[in-house]
Length: 118
Image (cartoon, rainbow, N blue to C red; front, side, top):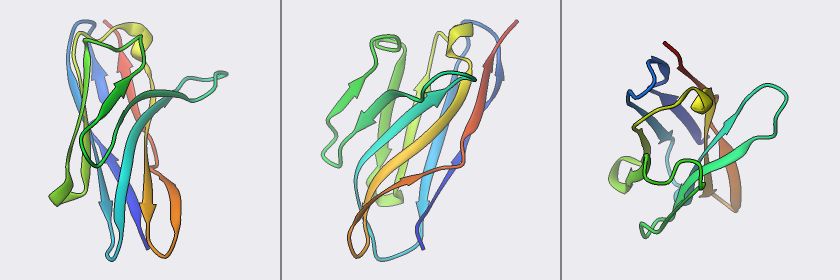
């Protein structure tokens, strides 16, 4: 059974930084694209950043230049380095990955709260 486990959320002041981590646990699987989404109450979940197994990345316009997604394939882990945080970055952040076990499926983490406030 493959699981995505997130960590690293919390409370930070505007202008501060946080790093989120998401590790895939289990065995006998391959991971292709890994993504971070975020969601606030009453709004749709939005894609923040994505990275392929080859390292290609893309970002939402709202986070370009402030957030960096990177991964450690040996550890089956994806990270989101968030700098220059703004109050509007406050949300629950979710990890998502396309994982091949017997077939391709989309897996989600449990979510981690990020709050940017003074």
